[in-house]
Amino acid sequence: MKVYKFGGASVRNADGVRNLHKIIAGEHGLFVVVSAMGKTTNALERVFDGLRKDDRKAALAEVEALHAYHAEIIEGLWHKPQQLESVEELFAELQQIAASAEYRDGDAELWYDRIVAFGELISTRIIAAYLSYAGVSCSWIDMRKAIRTEQRHKDASVDIEASAPLLREAVEKAAADVVVGQGFIGGAPDGTTTTLGREGSDYSAAVAANILGAESMSVWKDVDGILNADPKIFPDAVKIEELNYLDTIELAYSGAQIIHPKTIKPLQNKNIPLYVRPFGDKRKPGTVIRGSSSSVKVPILILKKNQVLLTVRSRDFSFVLEERFASIFSLLERFRLKTNLINNSAVNISLCIDDSWHIDEAVNALHDEGFDVMKISDMELLTIRGYNSSLFERYAMARNVFVRQSTQTTVRIVRKHQEEER
Ligand code: ASP
Ligand code: MG
Image (cartoon, rainbow, N blue to C red; front, side, top):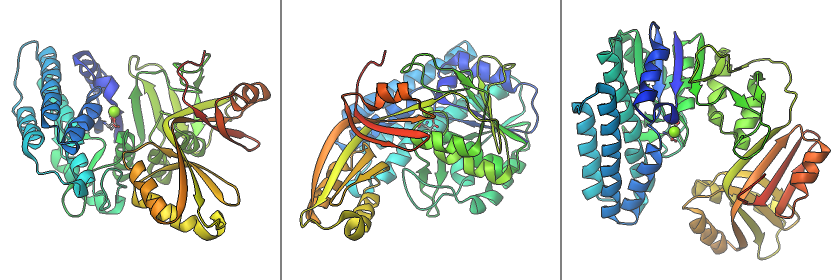
């Protein structure tokens, strides 16, 4: 058994889906994990925003646009206007939610998951139908029933032990050469839909590979493999041939958009190699990630955007690490805030956090617990592994730097967002 994962960019139009068919043609014993098409998840987040802000008109307009976008892909695949019943049903359900769901703020995460999950449900329906139409022995499975997560919405972890019998049974029952399932989504013990965090399809694929005892997992991307930097931001990016699991986790955690940070553990536990391969050319080797690899010879630059810098100080001047650490972090956890870097002095703690709609609520709660908080938005976190003096000079000493932390191998910089690097 092998696991292939296709991201949203690779199936953003009919040509992409046809290319997916080319890549999987002739395979037997393949489990295919697919994301939502193109930027569908972003659009679904706007549908959710429409509910949250009670702007139903905006929510419905987004659904309408998504319907048209997918209809065009279907038409491109069948070379004629074509209605897929399963897809029409999903859109009808989504439209119903956008128009008349009784949304309550207390259930925000629940609604978020329910809404954004449509992206993967729709994409896999289209792709499975197209593969069958193209003559592939193919079966669609519902990962909400096969992947059991913890009881937590929007960023749930998978309970692999509980999922294993469910997924194995679903794949067995499917009895097809190629089984297609959704990335990014699962089901909670209470039966509601959950999602695994943005870009979570890689994690879904890794979980499936673990459970199915796959010989390998491949992620098909629109790049040649893993690069040492985002070429859109840093010039002279080069491809890395091989990486080990540990370095990959560090990179992913720092915000490298190569792979979801949770992807590696399920693979590492079963020693399954992960290939990151170019979607456009099946013959190119891409990058391989496994237990051990030769060391990486180039510095790696990772930029994590959409950060907020909070500086928290106890109003009574308590020592922050000794006396208030636990209360600050349990509060951040309560508001689902993800901390990427911590910097402290005696009475201050600075936290670089993913921007989120809960930040202001958390700031208010911190106030109520006796803290003064300073918030700086529009920040970004730059991590450079294997830095040298010229990179340090150029990035760590720049004028827009607010926090800098360095070890022998790695420097991390919290800086004000800037548009252009070159
Ligand atoms: N569709 C989801 C997202 O865009 C999951 C994924 O692409 O991995 O975040
Ligand atoms: Mg995506």
